[in-house]
Image (cartoon, rainbow, N blue to C red):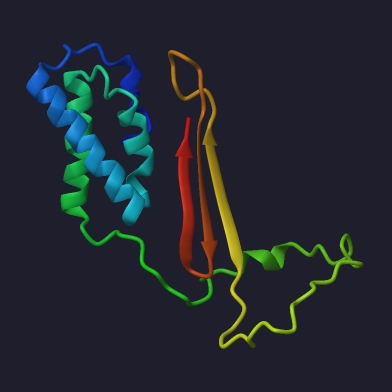
Length: 156
């Protein structure tokens, strides 16, 4: 979805029962796809899924655009990659002076690690008052361990 898209302002006609079911099926498939590998369309899916009870023609065209994006970019799935993150973002922050007394207790029965220690990086973004009718915000978060995203979420 484009930044300036506001599906809550759509005034096009409501869908008939056939297209209504089609819309719900397409949204259901998008929710499944975002769960297994495609976090890049999570925002669009969550924004459009709230209109499943009474979708309009404009909402259906947005869902079809998301599927067109899938067709145009089929290889944008999340890959499991154990390599370290490309940028070392934690080097900017040094908390040793604030937490000099902290030590990590490790159980002696744990096996020795086979590879390098992986960084945990968290990215967060928010669009405050994005919804023009309710003035609610949309926020997103992605958590990476190494180069693999393990948690992603878009909430309103």
